[in-house]
Amino acid sequence: MEKGKGFLEAVTEIAEENRLDPGKYSIDPVKIVAEVEKILREDYTQTLMISAVLGQMVEARGKKRFPPPAFFAFIEMLSTVVDAPHDTRSETSTEIEEQATRIIELMTTLVSLLCEWSEQGIIGISDDCPEALREIARAVFRKTKLLQGGLWTCISCGNIVEAKETHALMCLECDKKISSAHSIEARFGRLGERDRNGYGFTSE
Ligand SMILES: [Zn+2]
Image (cartoon, rainbow, N blue to C red):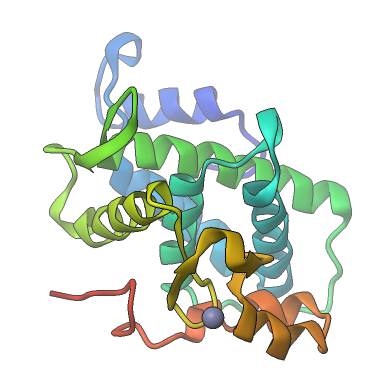
């Protein structure tokens, strides 16, 4: 897929690449993950800004809210791209917005494919979930279940805390440490560096 294409257009293209009838295509989650990784690896600053946009949206209420399961999947993906290059070009807000919108579409589609849904939300991991993506699906399912029970997984330290006792998606301790820094980098820049064996990155 190339940059700047509409989502449906891109999906149709994937369907055609796989010689599926675009009218009744099945979307390949592995390709969605590859596309997300490609965007996140483009540029470190851009990835930070996208993370900040999504972070704000997951905290929003109403229609503009980014669904938490899609956000959890995004966090998992973020941990796989620690080596995005730093460039000197500064992205325009329009560019960031476009890329964030694309990530939102891709992540929302991805969780709909990886997890099994009922009207109550996620009830498990989809039978069709490819083996390579089960780790992501498991993390999404677990964190979504916790959230349904009023618990939030801190995006910084990974500790599980009361959802209402968080600030900007972090436990109060992490928030206190970071709020003095006030930078997006302090908040989102270390997500990818978190120990992958820590909570939320089970590699069984
Ligand atoms: Zn924390």
